[in-house]
Length: 521
Image (cartoon, rainbow, N blue to C red; front, top):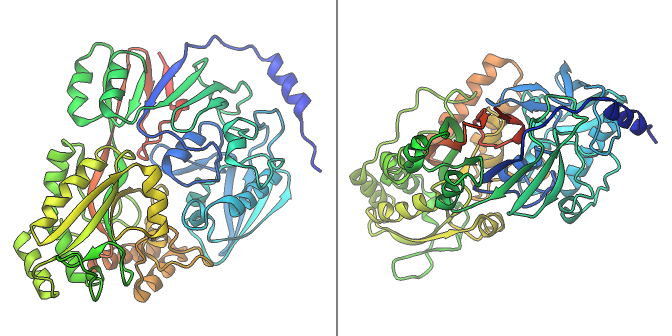
C-alpha cells in the first residue's frame, strides 16, 4: 500500500494566499457530457467534459500536438519499450498524491469498463503491459512498434488507484469517484444538463481566474445564441454561421473561429445482407449494392459538397476530399477535389446493375454537431437524382450511437474526428477489418474489410522512422479513397460566441470547450 501525502498537501494549500477570483463563468454547449466516468465512453462530448476534472499523461495542446501533462517526458528505449517520467508534486482533488500506481490502475480500469466496440479501446490496443518502476516512472511495453503512443496517451485520463475497477457511472456523476488532478473539482453534475465546477486550489498548473464554472447543455442553436446575447451565458460553442454577424454587432461580444477536425461522412454498410436496403418495390435485394465500388463512387459524385458547405452550413465548412484535416500526418496533397457529376454517377449506377436505383434508410445524428440534421436532410434529394430513394432519419445521438454500434443501419451520416492529429487513428479504427482481439476496427460499424488495405494500415502503424511513416500513411489515404471505402462530405469549421468584454478564450481545433482556456479580463 503506497503512502499518500494528504496532510502535507492540505497544509500547503492552507498556507498559500488565495487570490481574489472573478465571478462565475457560464458556458453553453451544444452537447454536454452523458457521464463523468472518464473511462466509460470515447465520445468527444464526454471526454471534453471529463477533461475539466481529469488529466492524461500526455497533454494535447490546442493544435493537438503532444506536450507534457502528468508525464514530463516519454522516451523510446527500444522499438517496443517506452520509459515515461511522471510529474512530481501533483495531487488529486482529495489531497492524495499522484504516482505511478495511479497510471497502472487507470489503464487497467479502462480495459475493464470501456466498451470493447469502440470507446477508448482503440487508444489502448497497442499497449501490452505497463509497470511502475518507481513512484514517478512507468515502463510501457507495446505489441510491436507504435509511433502514435504519445498521441494515444493523450486520450486516457487518470483516476486514483483507490477507485474501484467496477465503479459505476452513477458513482462518478454524484461526485463520489469524480476525483482527478485537473484544474477544477466537480461540484455537481446532471447528465446532458449542467456541470458545476469549482477551481482546485492545489492544481499544479496555471489556475482558473473564476470562482465557479457552470457548463450547460443547450442543444437548440437559436436558444444557445439567445442565451449568449442576453448574457445568461458568457461563452457558447457551435455558433451558427448565420449568427456570426449578429454576435459581432452586439457591443462587448465577438465570434471566435478556428479550423476544426470534424468531418461529416457517409458510411455504407458492407454486410450481406444489410438491414434497410430494398429494391424499389420494397423487397429484399439479392446482394448489397454498397459492396460495389461503383455504387459508392456514384453516391460520392452525387453529393454537392460546395452546396452543403456554402448553403446548408452557411459557409461554416469546406468540401472534403479525404478523411483527414489538412496538415495532419497522412493527409495527401495530391488528391483532387471530388467532382459533383450526376450524369457520371448515373452511368456508374447503370454499369453496376442498378439503373433504376434502390431504396435505403439514411440514419444520422441530429444534435451532436452543428448542422448534422440539416446536412442529412439535404442528402436525400441529392441521392434521389441518381435513383436512390432515401428515407432520412435524423435521431438524437443518445439513440444513434448505440444503434449504429449494434448494426441497425445500412447508410449512415455522422461526424468523425481525428483527435490524435495523425492518420493512423482513423484508418485503424474506422477502416481496418474489425478485430476485437487485436484492437482494430473499433469504430468500423459499417464492416469494411480489405486485406490489402489492412496490411498497409498495419505497416504504417508500426513504422517508427518519420519519413517512411509519413509516406506509408499517405499511401494508405490514397488506397482508402481510391476504393471509396468511406465518403467524406465536408470539413467543419469551429465557431464560438463570446462576451469578449469580460473574457478571452483560446480555441481548440478539436472543439473541446475547456474552462481553463477561458480567462477573465
